[in-house]
Image (spheres, rainbow, N blue to C red):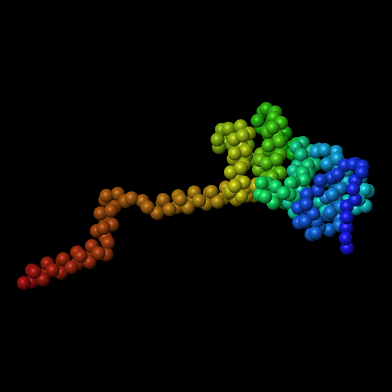
Length: 256
């Protein structure tokens, strides 16, 4: 078969799809996956960044169910060429099309999809946490601090209860309430694999056991007093045997 492209006499605009998408990702995707990707990319290119999509309109335009839309969107998240993050202050995700050429050249990283993100914290849960923090600090949180904590929680999966515990820990152990200092504590905990209160309590138990073992090892060595040391030496099997040998020698000499 032979195909040609006709000359366009009227320009009504074009949507720039990367060749790498067509060459590498399109052959492995289902029809619904490709349809959704092209539709969303076209709408963002037309309306600009921040365009708000209505799933019901997408369902109508593409003749796809909401479940099919969700499945196809997850496919591209798993491929890593679309990324998402939870927008601060609400329960909505913000999606971004990544440059495939930059991904292939190593200039950017493929998005790492975490299925645990499919049930994000609700706005009420986050609002309760931030209200608790403000009551604890006795000052309102700044917008940048709220955004930083929200993004950190979204990226790491740290529990809200552990975040509150970090503020308590920072004040009780370090006498500091500075949110930046608390974030440093949380980052260290995450590096150590602590993301939930269960992880935190496990850390405390291990710390108690470690201290108990150190105390136990120290109790093994107790320097004896001079009198006790001499007594122990006098009553040792070696000294008893030596004294017996000397007595026998003395008796032999006296008999002679």
